Length: 448
Image (cartoon, rainbow, N blue to C red):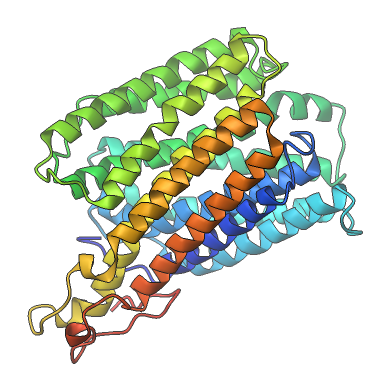
């Protein structure tokens, strides 16, 4: 990114994240986890954590490695933690998944490994969050994107801490008298702190700057600080409700409404600023990553409305699960894939041609990708997500699996496009590797 050094390990995070997404989609296509089994079954926990930690968690951490210094307008702090935290998170996730598979009867491993995986994940996420927070807090002025990312990191700490507690309980390390209350009251806080707090607030904060940058729109937001305040109040309401036992069953009305009100305000402020940004943009023809990202934003209100409806009306339809699916696969995954389509070639271009800029003819960033093919992949991906959500809502399990395989195919296609960008496959041969240029490695970068 402009004004920030290249991070050596960003591409490594992205590569592992994409592998986890493809693995999760293949499991969905095979009918593993919900709705074939109960939403709280070990198989579903495998699928949920593979997507939430392996795909979205590593995607966001990798992006923040490169993006936090841009938000802070300064150099990264404790950047050396990137490699060991990646190792800890990957090993911790694998151990956690093995523990869940053991609980589900797939393996004969002692479930006591669960807290080991939880501890590694807690340490890895905590070290990475401290590094990012230290980078962001170096800047005296707190702009809305930075505030939202800091709130997201706070929610990440709560999510990881609760996750460690749950893994210890499920692993049988200790079973206190209050274990049942923790599982009943704090489990929703764990899930929503991760999905809405850590992931959604971080995605909103990062998207403010990325949309502004790629649309050539003013960076000032009218509602950014109000948005951050509403988001913070929503998180406090969520955690206070969990601590007071308000979530029994999940999000009872007296604990649900404060969270719902503050989330609605957060969403309204974000969408209002996005509309202002779109109207004020100087780049009238939007690039593919921007248009695909804006389509992903449409899944955000859809998912939240479904979740709100699940708590306010009586129905047998899986509104809550469909809302979570829409947020995870439509909003967060769609936005992540869209921005990867720009970030990967952009960082590749800086790494490959930065050393010879101004001294040799070099390709443009757009020359490292082929938009028509990728546009088809993004269109099919969102069609598959919408179809999958409808199938989940209507109980059409077979068609839901087909939709998952369709998502798998489109993500695999986009992954191939990222690979080709890293290998400079589309760059014009005459200027592909001028003297002094660097051919990038596939999953690591040369910081120059």
